[in-house]
Length: 450
Image (cartoon, rainbow, N blue to C red; front, top):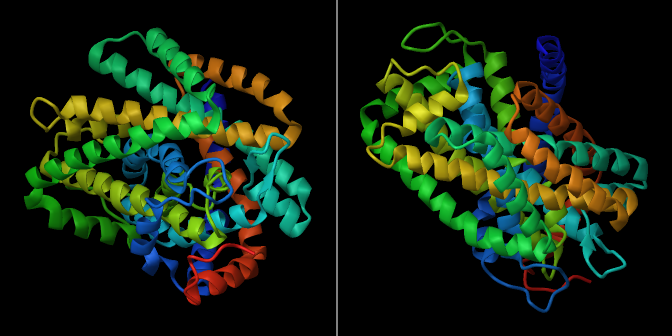
């Protein structure tokens, strides 16, 4: 088993070397420039996200598509993932994670735009879209779309399934002594009941769950930052300095390199916000919207909330807590997060447990939709049922196993999904610019698509 874990670690490290970092950040920067910094329209995007285009084509509202996307992204990546990045890459990883989110807003924007531009209806009248459809219809590269869907279906077992279920069961077992088998069974049954109702059922659950769980988690983070306020400035300085210069051991922190900070920060940033991975546009394609740019703006807010706000708060909480409490063992990401929230009197552990449980459960729901659409593209509806049965069963087993290697496999699948998606974004960037000019730069957001 140790040999297998070592092999997966080597593969993950190779895939997340400098070529992948350059490709991902390069795409973020390129799209930011050629789309004229869509980040500056973030408040317009937030306003659009709560409006409805009821008369437009689509399966769910824009807000429903957004909350389903957020459900899939606001998960263990925001809590355990950021803590793992700090443990492995040092405090500087927090800044790289945050920068991935800031510039990733442009990439998420472009993904949402192309998802609407190239989406099609299946025989049941439901929308299907995402990188696989953009690759096929926009670039005549169906073979690459098939590869993307294969990687997505496999990622559904990792980032979208077993990793999340394991995080829930492990925390409940360590905190409340609840059997991992009982947790695994409850997760599998709960997910099966929601998935049965399709995208509308998933969206309804996510619209109710996501805002509440996010507000509660942010409130907990703000309380910890208030308690740690004397260490905030030092934490910020340490995060920034460690991102660009090697950090020597001391002050309760081990020595780290710039490469490790960048590698783990960017990998966990992608794990958190999925900008560039190609998963979010799959549900964006289902949105009721009058033109591609409106949904593109709405989609971009997912990265803003997920990384620019929530991951930044998590990173500050963790680094300030390490400085404030040198006795904290930060070598394990989960232990670090638990120790930080444990400083909240009486309710800290309960907030963390509720946050991880609801975040991870909603991530599973979102990925249930993503992976299902990928399987539909590969073989039609008949493949989905078999895949989902295997996937739901894996949630139970994932809850009861040691998943050290699965985290490495999840990172690897993320990278393999991102490569064809980033290629489509770069090659179809002219289409994104043309649509943006037509609807956004010429102030025609209220117009219907031609």
